[in-house]
Image (cartoon, rainbow, N blue to C red; front, side, top):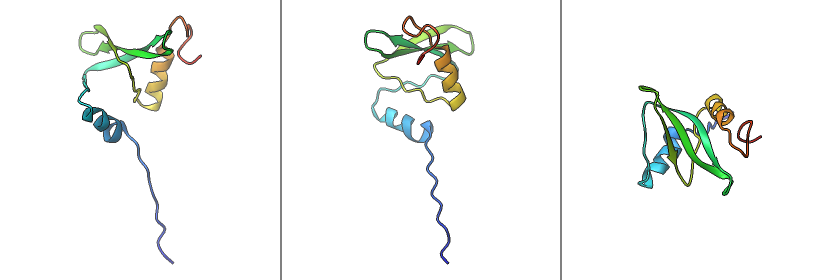
Length: 95
């Protein structure tokens, strides 16, 4: 009997999303930053930016973008979404 063939499909930011973004020539990777929450634009009804906290000095910065990928882990992505509030989503994004 032939051996069973097992296919494993692994998707990760490091192997797919980041290389694709790097090829655009419009990628900035910032180390020592923790995503606090996402900014929501009620006019476009899309995420318009990311708020981060510098892990070294605790300063806060917002980065704006036309397109935002949230590629954190399952738990971290959920935490970021729960931290993301706006007038449109007063409790949290998606509610």
